[in-house]
Image (cartoon, rainbow, N blue to C red; front, side, top):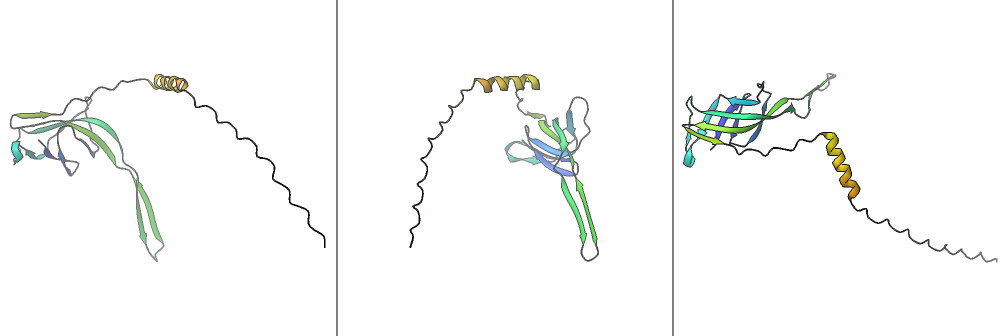
Length: 157
């Protein structure tokens, strides 16, 4: 099942488990996002229907950040006019967790929890693993080559 939603002036085709980057969203404290503007929902066996008020798409915020910088350069030849500006668009990455429509509910599988280690503990563990690795034997130095033969003296005429 998938749905077509509108967020930030753009349309996205989403399915449970998809991660999409939308325009920056103001989210609540729980990190849940509900998309209210649903344009279409796919039913069973390839049927697509326009949703009623009972359809909803729910996601959870994964990340918030800013995109790569793009440069906007304005130039008019022969007029000594140049203008250079940069822009970084803010985004919110959202993982779609649930699509509900017509009494059916499709949910994404739960993600496994990551082990949260402090940076200090992770560095200490990496250093310990590095020390225990067997070091490669040192390369033997090549024996010195004998000195090159000197050229014979020039003959006198």
